[in-house]
Image 1: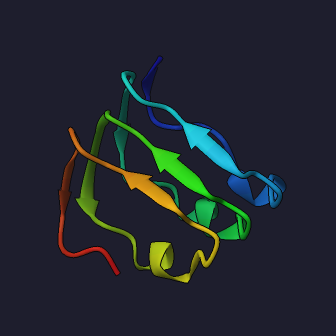
Image 2 (image 1 turned 180 degrees about the horizontal axis):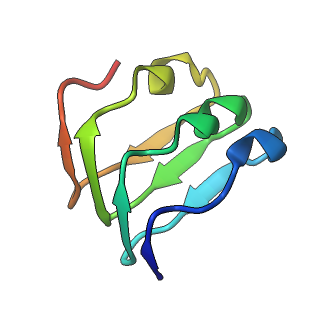
Image 3 (image 1 turned 90 degrees about the horizontal axis):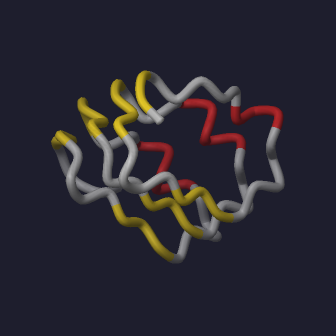
Length: 77
């Protein structure tokens, strides 16, 4: 897959795992992922860029975060 991640994650509040590695998604990590309160794993070796979103720090169920291979800046909240 390639291009921007087209999903409106606000419609998937029960999403637990998002494994999108080895694609060519680009752009910012979608802000609508903040609606996925039960997200436990986010893995993506893509072409995301920009700041690491602050909302990642509020995902209390997040156990695994793999964002290597992207062009993200900043610290993990």
